[in-house]
Structures are given as structure tokens and as C-alpha cells.
Image (tube, helix red, strand yellow):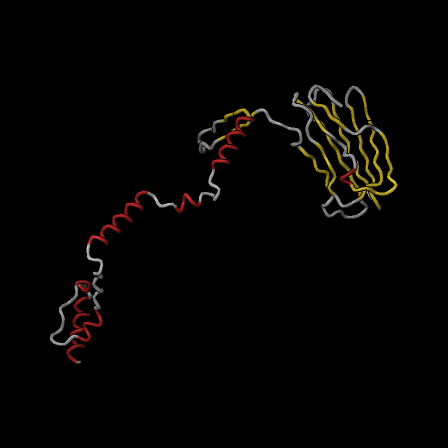
Length: 238
């Protein structure tokens, strides 16, 4: 079947009945390939279902000036039927497909006819659209498909194998410089010197003898005199 835009390949007309039911995936699908725009034959189809097929029949049911219609009918074991019809008309760039099925029971969605849209298909160009904001139209760019795929392949080969973790964990030049400065400052003095211990503020105030200690620098606040007075009162009582 073909017109000015499309060409379709289907199994040749004829009936076949199997002595034993066969897997649906091994049965000839209702459409084999299609072609349009001079891009070559592409596509395919297959059944995906646990049901078995006992017979199938292919035929041309309409052939005239207005359209050509092809039918594929499958019968399953122990019961059930599936029908596919495809119609092509002159001057129309589409094919109309109608499907009917009756398994004599409620189907659970596991009976499918899968169309392979990519088999044998090779695009000539790749189209790229970048974000341009809400007020600007994005720029549409095209590139030869083979060149685009090759550039992506090279970028993948040059990418780090650890997902970029080595780049994240590697310290930058400023970090290395800071480490060197710290190392130089610690080795410039005596190697046996140790930093002075931090002042024990609360413990020294309670154990010191003699007159009360003057207020500490960190107590210079509106509430500082109250705390200082309490501290002196506590020391005088002890």
C-alpha cells in the first residue's frame, strides 16, 4: 500500500491456522515497516502478551479510488480475537488505524501491540533549543546528526569516570596557599612551645583569695554591674 506520501508493508493476504497455539511474539505482526520522505524503510511491530495465537488472517477489504484498507485478524487460545485495520487514501499524509479486540473477559492491560518506531530510522539533522526566558523566543539551531552524535561521544569519553567527584574534592589554589602559610607559621618558632591554655574565668574567680577581681571585659553590658556585684558578694561571704 502506498500513496504520494507513505508506503506500508504488511504480511501478504492469506490465512493460517496452527496445529498448536504459538507465542504471540512469534506471529507476524499486522504491519511490518513503513517509509516516507525517501528516508528508507523503518519501524516494526510485535505482540507483547502471555496469550497464545491459534490462527491469523490477512486480507484487503477495500480497494478503490477513495482508499485502500487492509485487515489483519488474530484468534487466541482458548478464546479471544484481535482485529487491526489500516486505511490509506490518495493525497493524505497519514494512515488511519482502527483496532478492535474481544477476549471474552476483562483484560488487565497486559495485552499490547508494540510499535518499534526507531528500527532502521536515522535522522539527518538534530535540532537544539535553548532556554531564552519568558519574553524571548528560544533560538532553534540545527546540526548534522552524525556530527552531533560524534561531539557527544567525545565529550562522554573525556568526562571523569568518577562522576566529577575528584574535581569536587581537589583543593583549589587558595586552600593550598593557606595550608602552606599555616605550615610556615607553626614551624618558624620553637618546636617544643605549646600554646597557652585558655583562661578559666569562672573557676579562678571562685578560688582566688584577696580582694574581689575587677570586672571582666566581656561583662561590660547593661547587666554587667549586677553580675559583678553578685560575684563580689559571693566572694566576701566565703
